[in-house]
Length: 384
Image 1 (cartoon, rainbow, N blue to C red):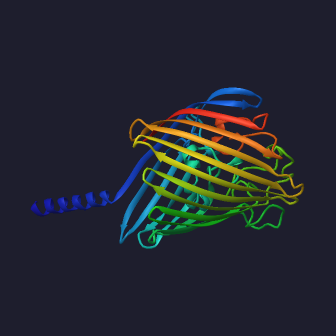
Image 2: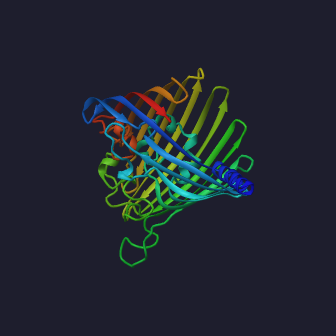
Image 3: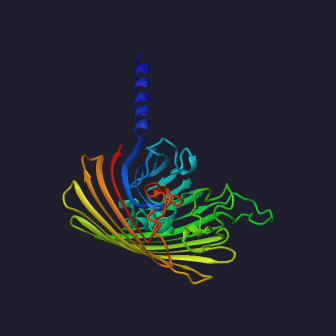
């Protein structure tokens, strides 16, 4: 009996130890508010929308210690609308992120599934967009997470004295049949990026390349990639046929000081069709300052310079955003967001967050009918 008791006690200790080495965390974000839009398709409007500053989500984040500094990791993250309960990201159950992989303290991590690209991983953090929820016009550089990438394998390095780097490849999942718009390369994506941090200074750079996005439903990008094949995207004569190639280059830097941070970002995006090309250059300066541990103020100015190759048309956009955020607790805050966009050059109307580009579009469902548009939002956000 004594031997049996000792055996059971020992087994219990090992079971408890194994359990302690694994963890699963449930988390989420709820964001809902009221918006005023100065010109919503020709008239002023007051509406309700959710998931603007941060997309509404719930998720499961887990890890298991495999020993020797090696862990199995996973994340399942679902997006949804708080105003009507609909699922986000095209109705996907885990449309924001869904991946599993291995992580090593020495060698970094390798994950596979639906994930963010390197531009988001290594440059987005230097933009003020995560603090306001409103991207550059049409979210042309994906800084506002208009799309995630399917069928990916991603490598992320460990922190090497402030240096981090990584890359991602998204499979097309198509065989080369020889037919038009088919093949191994169609609707695939790859990206590379790195960042460096030393004291108060940090910087990052990334590049992303896409082949024929949205050309099939099984590839790297499906159903949520921005579509510049219509005239409405530029308010001028845009691309006449589907995008066959897209490239994004982004660089950014930030300097932190006592109570605040300033950042600079540049991105260049190019969209090619079979007959034409449109490109955007985005220039941004941003700043955040905490007046108290509970209240912060953040601002962004961005200038976007577009060009259509066939005609030389050059739509331009000036955009200013300002947000005040007050923390009621560690998990709950209220914020007041204001944004102004001025269309210039060959751009005929302003469009702060059109509903056809990204999840933030609910804040401004339609473009203005003039060159100016103002958006004001007051909202509540809760994290768990």
